[in-house]
Length: 114
Image (cartoon, rainbow, N blue to C red; front, side, top):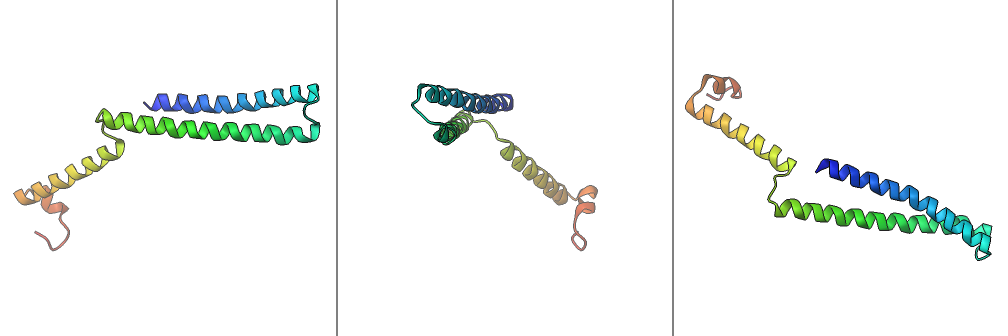
């Protein structure tokens, strides 16, 4: 799953670089055709790149939502759930050991509690 996300991010960055290059080529063609002057060209490129980045961000949000929904529907445990449950099990094991009077549990008790 992590590999998939890494590839998706790399692909997005690749699109961003390619889109800037494509925007610059497109603007150069407009300048050659006389439909855009040099003074307006950089602003136009910046606007095209900004819109591309906004579209990319919206796509990333949709992908994250989709993945979150898919993980939830597949009933997979998240890392946060795993860590929380692991800590809870450790706490319960300690309490059981304390109740059973285990010497190891007595050593882990705070001073004054036996």
